[in-house]
Image 1: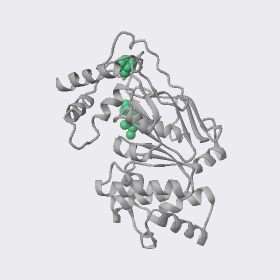
Image 2 (image 1 turned 180 degrees about the vertical axis):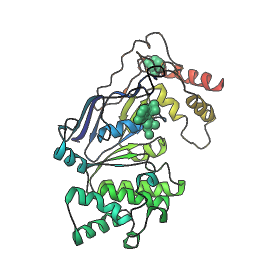
Image 3 (image 1 turned 90 degrees about the vertical axis):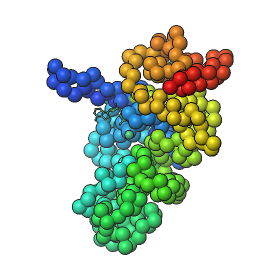
Image 4 (image 1 turned 120 degrees about the vertical axis):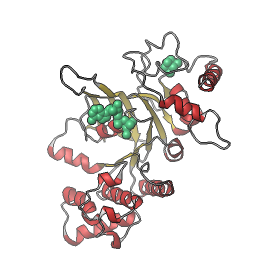
Length: 338
Ligand SMILES: Nc1ncnc2c1ncn2[C@@H]1O[C@H](COP(=O)(O)OP(=O)(O)O)[C@@H](O)[C@H]1O
Ligand code: SF4
Ligand SMILES: [Mg+2]
């Protein structure tokens, strides 16, 4: 599969806010992340809140400027692009946000919302423009009767359909989907996910699918990238990552996936992960302040992950003989003690 997108060593540091006296430390929202996305592929990015998923997605689309690294789209680094070249890139790469209500202008009708990118990028007017707007709305399961509606006249699911119509109206090659269903009722989530899956195939798009819902990710992505405190800690084909997760952080996340019968360790795993106010280590493994398996050597482990297409984990211990058995005990002890 040829690459549509290649992210190389991407870093985004947010400067600490405040005055000289009260200045907070800078936030390493994304640090040294390298991933590739093939044409027609869905790459999921998972991790808990604050792990850097949204920042990565925004940097990829240049909605914010990375501090370091490269974002290569169809062979061209997009970070130095300006003017017409940047506009050309924006036509090919669009974003769908988590909260449709917040991402749609409340004063605009559905027709105008969807027309905006077509006018901006293709300069269409009149009946040609109307035809394309209707085509985009139909593609997302809406119709002519929805054209005059304002966002507040629509349900959350319909609003997200309008947001998706706006994103696909100019027929992009890449969609960054930032938790596209997490603001919706559970009953609607499945419909929107099914719609996105269908559109990907019809329009031959690639998806960067940001989500913390591991069940959705497993069912709807080809490869999965796991982030923790801005770092990529595991990367591989989705089935490999889920069936044979290698990084202790991903193994803890997996405990949260609902099962029948219910996993008795799930509540303790959720509490363990929620309680994470640990400092981000300046060097060594980024998970070592929380990791039940941390041992001598983890404090100096360098864990750059240059992706080679295979399954990779940023844990120096996961290949150790007997580590899987040791992990079972560590997990039980850590979670049962809570
Ligand atoms: N504009 C910003 N200014 C300062 N810090 C930010 C900004 N955006 C995100 N961050 C911080 O960067 C880290 C990663 O955030 P984010 O990318 O939103 O994570 P996620 O999407 O995984 O929840 C968090 O610590 C967050 O507080
Ligand atoms: S490198 Fe060490 S601290 Fe980091 S995940 Fe592996 S065992 Fe845990
Ligand atoms: Mg986010």
